[in-house]
Structure formats: structure tokens, C-alpha cells
Length: 324
Image (cartoon, rainbow, N blue to C red; front, side, top):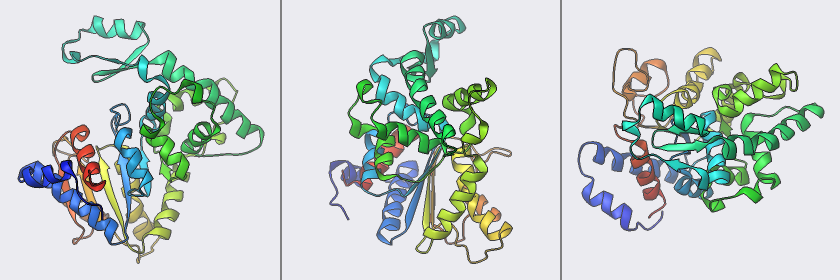
């Protein structure tokens, strides 16, 4: 594939053991999947968009190294918020030392903290609200219904946000995905900021809940997509834990067991980046082999778990795939 550059050569030379070696193995395994013609799902949990993963993930999308994304509603919207309000974000390096009063002071300034980064409510949330509401309302007036990500695509591609851009457009993974009309599933979208805003309009009688396609419809869409694209295998690259990973991985046992389509192939590759510890009942911290018992992974599926910070690991793996 791509001739390897300085970053890739460095990690191959010096990332030799433990989680470092697992990172290299997973990157090579991901690349092998692409070489064999398999497709790849990437799931985004946590606050990867606020961590500005888009600076490298957008290029992964442009180079067709991911074929479908599962992400939380927060990641869906926060990439766009960063696009339109980046200069208004504030970093708090000493976030571990903040008192409850310090946190309250941030709230009163309209700053919502995600670890060391504060998202500005007015410039981020409210800057998008009027534009996306119009798109929701226009669809409803026409009797149309779309998924959450499809409304976001419409907003981005319409150009209504161009006057607000504060970063290079090439660093927005959502814009890269919109240009390709990349399939996305967004389980649990309702708990995101935009999901809460949509629900508020429903409560006020200004929108119908049915104008937004549901999580069940996302699952049935994913089932059809998996069935149509799994001939050469589909890999699963999971960044973080939670619903972004739990939701899509279940499509295989659903098709195999509940739909009784016994020819449904298992996921052909699995990697999880997580710092969750294996504990009683912990799914995010569970080792990949546990997924065999649920009919998600095969005995032969290449399996990797990298117990580290995704903001460090994911960019390095993506750099390897891009040959950097």
C-alpha cells in the first residue's frame, strides 16, 4: 500500500512490547483487512471530536480507509462545533485541581468542560441551533424523515455555516464524511445536546418526534448494510467503549440468531482502544474473547485490545494507515 514515513517507521522500530506492540499489531491487522478487500467500521466514543481527532480522521475518510462509522451524538455534533467555534474554546490544563466553585464559575461563563477543554455554549451549541432547527422543520413540513447524521450532512453541505468556519475545513471529519455521504449510525442520539434540543422542540409542540428517525431504524439500516457489504468481511475498530461500540457489534448475532440468517459472517477483525479495566459486568473492559460467547466474533477473528489513551493511540494507528 503506502510507502511508510517517519512516524510509521518509528513505531515499528520502537513500539515492541506490551500496549505499544499491540498498537503496531492492530495497525498492521487493520491494513491487512483493507488489502484483502474487507471493509471497516470505526466506532467513536468519549469526546474524540473535541479531542480534534478530525485533524487526521478526516483523511482516513477521504482515503476510503473507513466505510461506516458508529458514533455517539456528542461526537457527531462536537466536530461541527469545533469547526464553527474553535477560537472560543478554552483549555484548562489544571482541570484536576478545580474546585466545585471553579466548575460553577465555568458554567456561569457558558463554558461546558470536557476534561481539559471547555466548549463555549453560545458560540457552539446556539450557533448551530437555529440552522439545524430550520432543516428539521423544513423536512417536517414536506413530510420527510431523516436520521440525525443526515440532517447534519444537509446543514454542512448547504453552506449556511461557512461564515462561522474557524478551522481548516479539511480538519473536520464530519465534513469529509458528508462529502462522501458516508454511512453513519448514531445510537442513543437523544442524549446529545442536539438530541436534547430536538426533544425540547417536541415538548413545545414545534416538532414531531417522528421527524427524526429512531435507533431501531438505525439498527435495521445497519443490518441491511452489513448484509450487503460483508462478502469479503467487515472489521470493527472500536475507539473507547459505551454505546458507540455496543450497538453496532450486536448486528451480527441479531442477524444470525434472531433473523436466523445462519450464513451471516462474523466480524472479520476486532480492535478496541480502551483504558477501562476488566471488572464484574464491565463490557467496555471485557477482553475480546468474551464476544465469542455472544456470537459476535469467531475463534479465528484477529483480536486486539490496546489498554491506553485513545487520544494517543488512535492518531498513531491512523498515521500508520496513511503511511506517515
